Length: 282
Image (cartoon, rainbow, N blue to C red):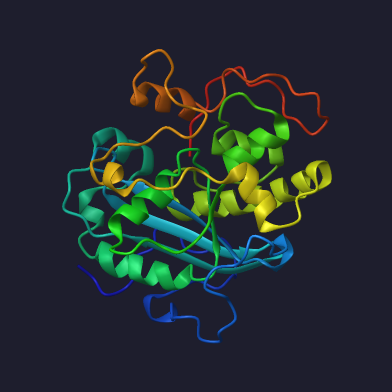
């Protein structure tokens, strides 16, 4: 195991990029432990995150990418591979391109998540996952889960565009004209999620008057983590998306993550077209 972050992509431009020694514990006291629900969105700090995993239960973390940002500024990026000796599912490896040979010199999951805790302190977490897979995975791996609210961009898109099914990240990027430089790379997925989030906040503000953290939580907060379930490798269905007529949770999850085959055509002029082809998920 190594003592430094092991990035795969690096920053997309000239923005600050976190090294292991850079992630310190709120040096200026600028961010509160947890913002209140009355805090205006424009005053919040957010951290968009994405995880790549071994691809089989119990899911093991092999890469973490995150972007700290406000509505008008990219603050810092965070990216590293994560040491693991667990078997990586061949299908997962084909998707994200991470093999066991890449992880030998990476830092341990404990070191990575302790640095991530400091990186995300005082922020609202943002992910693209209706069942909060990424934040659940992190919560199940930490001894003490993060004290943070989290938001799901697929729920935000569903509220704005009146979608019946979950839209995939790649499709959402197309509809919002957001560049996604490397799908299924944790940092690139986090960057795309952050950019989509800013656009969705703008659309939601225009259409629904979203102004505070509480407004966002009312439409985009996933169900709270069930740590025991996550440790056993199970992914709980999101509220309102439970399996019907005895269908298995895994079947329901597969249907959600296809990214939008059964969308109802919205009336809003800001809505994307009906999605008639399966899309990849986050």
